[in-house]
Picture 1: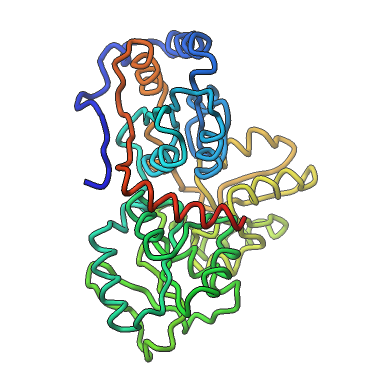
Picture 2 (picture 1 turned 60 degrees about the horizontal axis):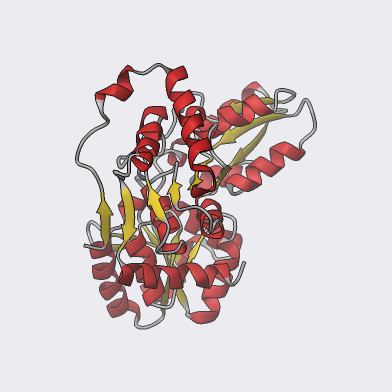
Length: 366
């Protein structure tokens, strides 16, 4: 087992399903006051408003994990995000701090596309084909085991904000990069560094083969065949529709979108870059945003002086990122008060040690 989780097998107790929203909100407020500094509630950008309203801080996954680590007063970190985020928070916090994920079903389909067994088998095959010329990098949207794999093999983690800087560093270490688990962020970042598409190969972990038609020795970047199920749904057709219907509307997308979409957009960047760009844009400006729907709706509610829409009008919130709701949050908080903790996330020590190496190699350079 690479991950040890003390977690209940029971589903959400019926009593929470019977409570009114007002009652649950009042109970959450009461427990926050009762626990005071002993409690820290980080909320990821993609979470529902019903949960985010109670967060001490909102942000991206790594930012929130770092804030959790800096908050040395908090005994309990109830992470309103997904599994890999809670793992990272546990890795970076002390043994005296307890990380809880309110709903264990909250996950990331992209992170699940690279498991450690597939990665270790793939690494052996890549070494056979290309020798000791590869350094692994993983997006922080990955499991603790994948982060540990990268740490063990001299690699590091990256975020969408610092991916370019980390790829530049990685090329000072080895001739080639293995980028996990999101092929689109890897491709977009490498292309931005001047690496042509024909020097990038896809590794398919299912068939355990390269998707590449030329001499494999030509490859500089190996892209794991994974993707974000939300960002991959933004298409060139969406962009063409916007351009046709409202030529004045600017299009801004996340680099987890496909290369074709990023190339056609006006702007592309991390969640923080998207937020900053919209914040700094003038009143009356128009934006079609290619990222998760909860965040788009939140941006829209904040910037009422601007016209903001989703790039894909049929987009819905991420089903796995969107799991945590008010009943589960209250359940987690009451478990603390009652001394019967649920859904505690605890990464095995040997995994945490190597994963922290990967995280620190990034943090030292950004």
